[in-house]
Image (cartoon, rainbow, N blue to C red):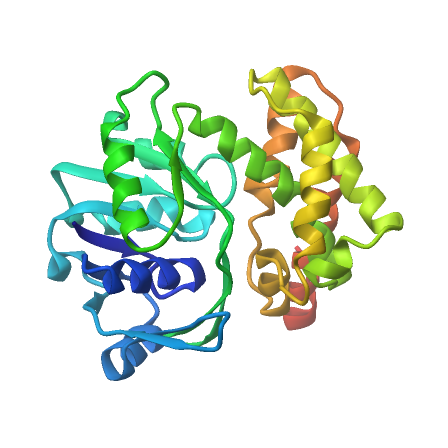
Length: 317
């Protein structure tokens, strides 16, 4: 397939671009980071694997979608708050048959993309891989064994587009399951993120430390149960006890991994709290449900973000 990864110089986008390129697909990267684009042009896109080996993908990378041309599939890996601007930038990549894919964190990215592209051509999903940017154009693939799920954005839509995307990723060694209930899979991952991302961002604890028994894990369990209650009220068949147990297992394997929101906090970058716990709060308000712990996480993370502006200019407005 001819594939363009939007945000392909970032952590997860870089992993996907390199893996798909290594599998023989024709892959391009659309990104707006001048430093990353320069590094990729000079040295290639470099991904460090968990086994200590390094993969170098020499592929076209540009901030101009017109230079990359129309693709069979366009995969979005940008931060959620960049989705609208990235979707607009990516318009030249999308032809009459192009499949548009969101594998982003949080709830609402596919809805945003549906404002730019035909909904029947949208595929949405989640992945449990993780990665971090070590330097411009250099990515560490920190967790490479988790599942990936994709399915149609529209309920009841045909699975063919999702199946084609999954086949491309399987060819790249990315285990991928096609699901007609992709939105449920997004909520299952969202629940994990609600429990672990703000707690890591606020405590600075690594993934493995988050999973150790004690008050922090108890807090994560309550976040999990609140978010699951909202998901179930929306019609997603998710067992709260399964989510709690699975999140414990996930954290126990995490070691010194840094969740994405912790990475953002360390870099004093905007977090995705609005589409993680914030999404749970918005849906809970609409449904008339009470989610005080998730609401508190939104307030605390937003307060932390305000503190950076306070440090910079003396004002936290």
